[in-house]
Image 1: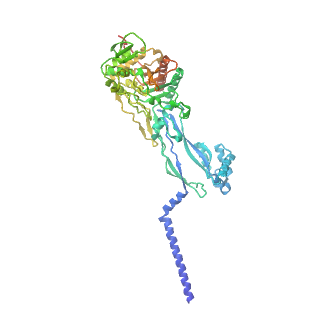
Image 2: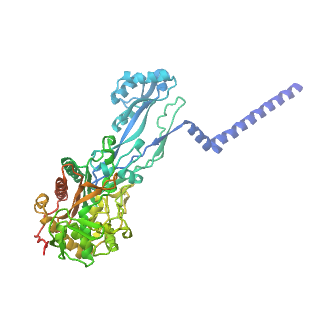
Image 3: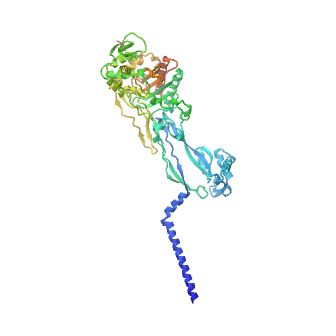
Length: 600
């Protein structure tokens, strides 16, 4: 009896133990399946999941017509895990790629051959890559097979479904037009860091936001098929649109390079601006940098010098003085002035014309036509210094441009209270101050646009990855002189061209041209004194009867002499004007022009 009770107790205890164990397992099961499931899954995923960056693509830079100036070329690196190529005797299963159904077993050697057929390598070469990596480290998990493959090759390699083959994406910046507009586009440095030009100034627009994806891998480190999950989508950079015309930019660079080389000059610049919009349709400089090969270019010519390198403009700024005189009612195009070739109007002040002549009975138009320093300074100083300073600023001198580059020099214009008496006279004919060639183009755009200055534009807009377009703010238009003044100065400038020594050089059959030459001394930064050679410029408007474009050409310090420098600047202007007429199909001039009187 006692033995029966003992056996029953044992059974009861055993049953209790089983029940308790079951309850423990049940509680744990509920915890794993329900209470802690999310946390445990996340923890397991963290241990299995491998994060991979999805690189965003840097945006394009395009011209006014959408022609690509800078783009991003996507490239891919092919990689493998050397240690995993030897797993399972160097074999792995995969779907039958030929039949499309079932699976087949593939050896590592066969896979090497398939890879090499796409990458241009032999199976033996890839085997050596694996062997070398394992010889150095028996647990090696990484080796490059081929770097820099294109997208079609990548897609074909992915179709092979080789578990130990992986890929890495990277981007290279490409400039398909070489040095054309290189001075404006700029370039990138180490690891794609923008260093200059639009690449730098518009970096925020061009830069995208990287995304991320993950894939799960097994204990052997091999990616599990179908486990790729995109956790954050990449957002590509925006597209920056410039105002330049690619073909015209090329022609402008050809023109200025040819004239600089012909005259053995130190540098040359040539810009074309739309009269009605202020848009720069060409900004050319000699020796422009090729962003694909920056080291091959002159370090002094890698920036956009048209915006960063101001110089004394000389006689092209006599137009500002004439405009101020007319606008203030102090003079007209017919105002008479007996003009000597040299003058000392007060103690310690002296200036003269570029050629010797007897006192001449010139009108204000004649003074501008003959480019007389004496006549311009004499009449210009009928206006207070403060008034002339105000007009210089109205025309954009001493005022920084906001065309869209990282650095845009404002030039040098001292306030009138800092002018000594010599400076007061010199500023009337474009000395003792400085401006960029873009600012000079702005002066003539103002005259051609009925006296309204429109700030220059180089960067038109940024269009983001979603297609939203944002236009850049370049500043507000400003009236510099009255429409009547503008009209009279246009007549004077057309007279200058028709009466000038260079009228046959500049002639474009069927098109009337208005403009002004300039020959300016420049200060040598090493000595602080004026150099003995000059910067030669021509600023012109065409067609003069219906102004559409302004072009300014400057040739600096020609080795072949001053006469050649002036001719070179005028020739560069004519060539780019002809190219602009062709590019934008500008109709010929209508009517005839009667020059204003230059003498009395």
